[in-house]
Length: 487
Image (cartoon, rainbow, N blue to C red; front, side, top):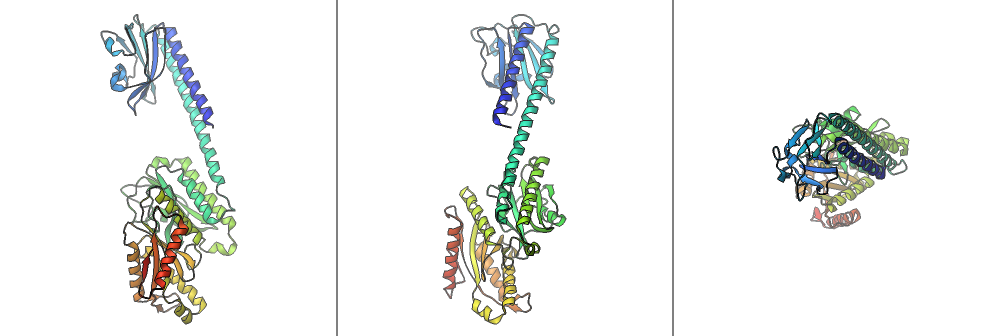
């Protein structure tokens, strides 16, 4: 529903309140009637309206509790009558100037859901006979209750309709004609818009493991890119069951993805991406406030993932249905996916993010020797073994491998440790030194060379980062002594 209609409803509500206060004053015969809301969050009385025929009365829009005579009556549940000069001094009636006419005051509380939310005050030069006007006060309060309830119901309906209209727009952004990675991007962004205190991340299988591959740009405090999925996590549970799993976190348990995460608070919803009955990914939605996950919000998130899954399923060919849809060759993630991930991480840095992220390329030192020694079919399997062995998360470092070309693999590493890349290279070298067991049988001792660069807020785009990393790899490949070079 439009904001104009909400504004119209609010104006009409205020006009009715004004009319009711005026009718109350005239029907009771008092000289002054005024009504204020009790704003407990700001500790203020907020004046709504007043009716009077006195020339020397003026009200401020709002007054702090401690600065007004109504302060001691903010929790009143019954009607209270005061005599001016006895129960309250004239000096406290600051809405009068020059002189104070009032001799009798009647305070009428308005209670909603067990809490005093407003006070209506009648002031008169004469004694107010409470019994005589009791029926008029009762009618006034009943009318106030009905008007408030009607207004809140109208606003809720407006907001509810507006919410679903916004959701319909989200759904239309996911189009089966898009590339599967573009579908993922739009899905994550739309999910993120429903999580003000959290975020959304995507995990997919590759390199013989499941890893966090993509994080929404606006995700708050997301787990590290490249984090490897572990058992006893929300994401693992969802994949095992093949259906969404919602959980609240107590004392850091359960973890969303891995025990390597930093603190886990609030609540999480893990939603598997099922395509032709095969688990091709899992989206982890989280927020520090568990109340964010209302039933309507859960429905939206689950449905966005379902629509994305169906859109991807529509675009794939039958031979692809049994394979991993987000890897390209050798179990390494497809370029479209890691390029999008780089773009997202750069945007996060430009928005003030502080994660250390490196991109690089790594290649066997003696490719010609491999080609001479092994058949083409065996070389394909050996490259798959290489990618699995190079997988940074296997070595305890958040990161993953992407496909670039035969024998040249992209890597992304994200870590709080400034030496994470060199630590990973050392661990790879140590593993290869004793020989890597091959899936075709036997083992191989291979040496790798790597060139890399660190992403910064000054990096123009992912193409610049890729270009720097490739130049670093070329430099190290042309240097017989060097094993790793940073651009």
